[in-house]
Amino acid sequence: MVKLTDVAKLAGVSPTTVSRVINNYGYLSEKTIRKVHEAMETLNYQPNNLARSLQGKKTNLIGLIFPSVSDPFFGELIETIERKLFERGYKTILCNAEHDSEKERAYLKMLAANQVDGIIAGSHNLGIVEYENIDLPIISFDRALSPNITIVSSDNFSGGKIATNHLIMNGCQQIGMISGSLSSSSPTNLRNQGYLEVIKDKGLTPHTLLLPRDTTHNLKINKIKKFILDEHLEAIFASDDLTADLVLKVAHSLNKPNFKVVGYDGTKLAQRIFPNLTTIIQPIDEIAEVLIDCLITRIKQPDEFLDQNIILPVQLLQGKE
View (cartoon, rainbow, N blue to C red):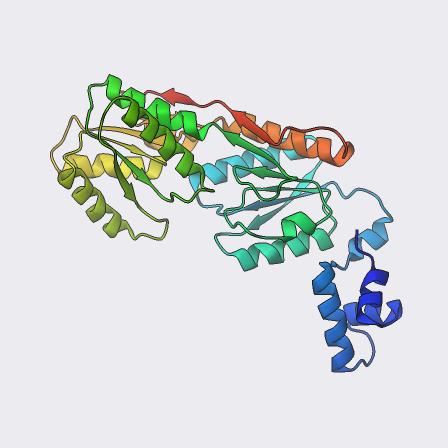
């Protein structure tokens, strides 16, 4: 781990001067302050006030970095992780990074400065080099953040195959898929690949629609209507339950009572609100348990071997008739 003396050496000043810059104590020239801050930035040094008082003791604090606390899936996953960590004697610091890389970098620095014991990251912001430089145990949900960070995820590829096969078994041939993102790093891309593999194997024609997360509600409705009508669709596999429910409402408005839809995530909230929706369930309780087990292993046994990718099975939940 980078020390204060490393910063002093790079900046060409004394450790006392670095300490004074950090604590904003006494008079210092702007040039000296700038040199110290540049050295801290270069070395990714985080002033660790809490660690000085703890003298090497564990904080029993875990940082959680996720893209949204309002999304039903992430909301339920975060709640489950927090509860399970508390049962094991850990408290959490929740960081809502949204889709802002700079905000996520700021949260990473804050967590390192407050000497959390480890981090669980469900980040949607990629290319953040701080994940490789921060000397903390980190476990990732769904995304590759660094070659040295274990990833826990559900089987998104199989989920796409299961959903598409279910629609075919129900007599559908013209099947579309709606995704929020098709970037190579996105879990919805794996769901799309599963869909495409089944469509290709069955000799059917693929139909895909991209609805980015910032698409307005009314624009989504218009795009879904056009998608269904232009492609003469009989069914749609949607990469999340909220979109799937919207598809059902659009199909109803188009007087298509037999239109088939499969969603994705299967949170408890979605099951209560959309009991008629058929969906692919991600095992939230098991995901949380594995994320925590892996992180605690990293904290207590840093050299213990962990698989790079841990993939948990998904299952189809048939909606109520």
